[in-house]
Length: 358
Image (cartoon, rainbow, N blue to C red; front, side, top):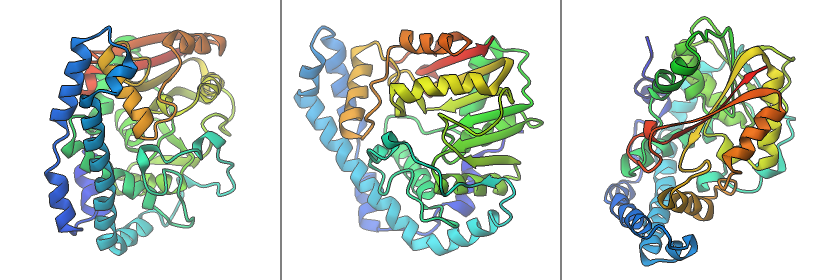
């Protein structure tokens, strides 16, 4: 049975007390969707219009202003909520991660330069902020923000059912006999998709890898809360420390659009190294971000790059990524789930970058 992560975690690992009531109310009154819809209507009605002209339009300026104001205010609301309930959350998290048997930290890990260049999503302190010991603040901030953003935005939240639904739509069709014994999730962040993989493959050894120490601690506390035996390692996905041919399935979720081309190429090679012959690599990303094909998708991508610190979101073409997979010794599989124009359903805009180890 798949556990609904959000409802259980919310009771222990999210703030239960209110924050700044005035800012909370102000945030609840912000409506982004009408501005986004106007911008997308402009893009779709004039498909031959240069992208730069669309981004300079009144519709784009209005949406960017509203989106930026919402995002800055959202982080303020998140921090106010956390500050009001931090001691309780920390007490529970400290207890949850006290044994540390499945949490493998490396405080001496060298962080790649490209990951230090900016704070993605303008998150205060960034995803990699970590004071050491039992710090979970980055993970706590991230999940709180996702919760706020999904309630006030036309974009979907990261659903608890995301992994099972993708499995139903893609994995079961392409790899019906896949029954992995060892699974590794690269760039796992707070581990929600990693834990979902453990739900899907309960008899498999499931490992999450990320650079951020505080993110990993939060993920491990979540796994402990759900009684899931998931392991978390602080490692660089470009060059993990696991032996060759140790895994049957390698995954990532929304990782590829956050890294430069050079890192993407290294990760494809690393996936091939980690997989046993016949093993499967599957990277899930947004069709709006990874090689978008429509004016609407390109507008959203470029706004994210310019105003949301998604500096690597202008990814290489899928043909280039396909060549990376081939060069690494895998048979490439490139697929889409649904229509990238849809902003209301994650399943309608997922880009699949997969490969089978030869």
